[in-house]
Image (cartoon, rainbow, N blue to C red; front, side):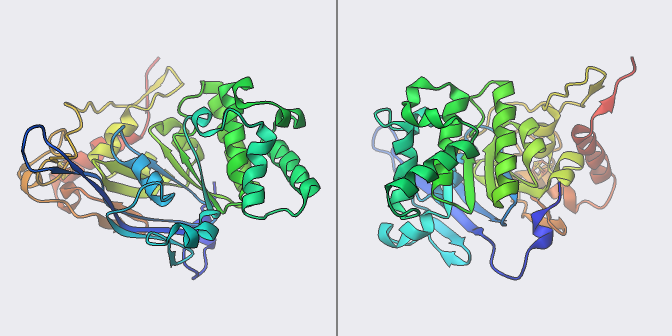
Length: 355
Ligand code: SF4
């Protein structure tokens, strides 16, 4: 899979997120001072035309909040969101409208986002008309027929209602509705998570075909690393609202440099019974984002924790071009780092089992 960033020009990226934060005030029971829940706490990344960037992490790590902020379904507390270098995080709904077309979203549960009283043809025609992408009723009809064909649904699907379709078919309708706006990027927020394995593979293949044919960028938000490994160019790993590692697919899956990434990878099942991964088991639950641990937020669960981790926040540091990680182990020049890197590498790399 070639990396579209290799072909990038000096133009600003399609999508850029800088220091994005989303905080809520959470009331305490009784008369205590409200506390601050940091759902997203300083996340930055770029997305280039034709690229897939996956954001991964356990449930509650803030990855879906990032999606909602980019779509302006939530308002950021701080940070910037730029499309082709133009800030959209502070635009009014009216000024945002033409920009909104460029980035569309597909949700995990398409049923809840499709109007049950509208036929599929009307659901697809709505964005075409709203963004004035076809003039006249027959042009809109042709566009709807094209969209159905693009997601491999028969033309007759347009005459039916959302409840008449299976989960996989409804996800195809969700993708067609996103495509109707002629976007440059689609945010897929756990878009295949609720589907059966075979349907999941079909939808992932469809997304890849659409990316190839239309040059679409995908921001793929998922907790399923097996799917991510199949679809992505780059990976950003989030823990407790923060990005802890980011690199291209090969680097993340072959040589992670953050223990959390390694632990996530070690849990990915391998279909071959003669190959297994060294599993890194994490103890305890994810701490509360209202009161995150001091120092490294991962220190309460990290198998490599040492004194410095409990007091000093590790900076997201560049290890080499395109690879950043926030872990003090990467500052150690000697044995501990070598051993940790070995273990992290083993977690990323499958091990042959003697038969
Ligand atoms: Fe683990 Fe320390 Fe690295 Fe945090 S900084 S991931 S606690 S080794």
